[in-house]
Length: 438
Image (cartoon, rainbow, N blue to C red; front, top):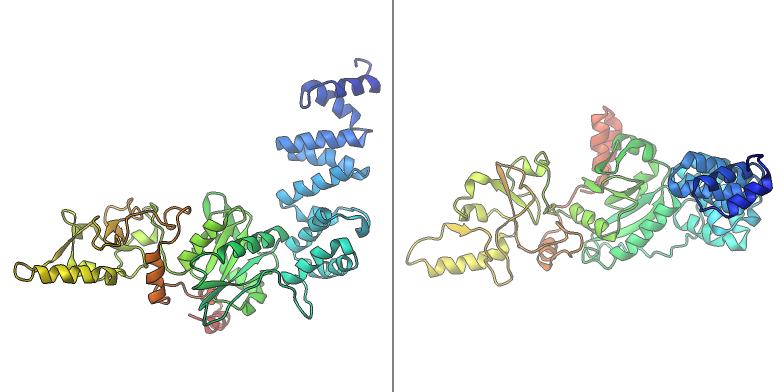
């Protein structure tokens, strides 16, 4: 070892614990000429999160034809969103690619929006039997066009059965596959009768127009989106959903933003926002919902001045303004009739069930941070709007079915129209607003 003999380093490397100083010392020496050991060292650095070192050693292995090194390089660059490096990586003839390698190269071109190269690559996939599944995905997600598009995911947007619809958009293959999975799960939801999945389709890159922080709601420059994603003008739906690499899922008017790590429960929760439901968990004091009183806010949350809640009661006049009052009215009227000979019922108790079904006026956590505004909800138990593990209650579904239009979000065209107006682009703003469905 002192004289730096290769055989001594080989013996030491083989008999040292992986990751130890001794293992790394000999491994680094051997990696200069041995691509398998270079790949081993690179793989260890990758597992430790040492991405710069991992890239260096894996590249040595790749250049010597080690498939494992090539695949791990592609994994590294996909996770770090370095798609240009994937596109530039020489991996030999397409006939030798397996599905994973082909998908990685395909994803790099999709993420950078190189349409001409995508079309050329699709033609090569079509000529290779083992790569045909990827070709079919390119057609299905409308990355390329074909006379008769294939569709494994069957969308049902019959206007009589499904009055509202949403198009799911992404610019990476993995995200499109994830959308397809979420769409299939969502079809089992009790919201699918009101809002259906119209399509799952590719759009050119849009991440650069968005602010992405792990614990912060996703925010995008919607004027920029409207200018660059011209194909959106033809999206056959009321709403659109964009999948981003990270950030907090949320709904902004007619656009739903989702983190690619989010599951079907989170997606369904966000769809509920599009249909007019508000969160029942504690919101920040600065949240718009808790800035003023509003009995026409949503199906499940109404806000009142804290001063109007006196000794655990609210006035009947206040109660009559709540969106779910129709569910309570028969009980209130019956009580009024029973007490007609005595006194008129003018105050209603808070946090008590008023009907056999458990409907009442219950304080929600929504505006707990506010000192001036109190939020009420119609039932006391947990729902999807405060915990994703719970379903949307039958009462909420019933209320929604009575008047779908009352609290639903405007269509996504309105987002772009407003954004263009604020960007002082009046002509474009008018064009988008004229396309708005509601």
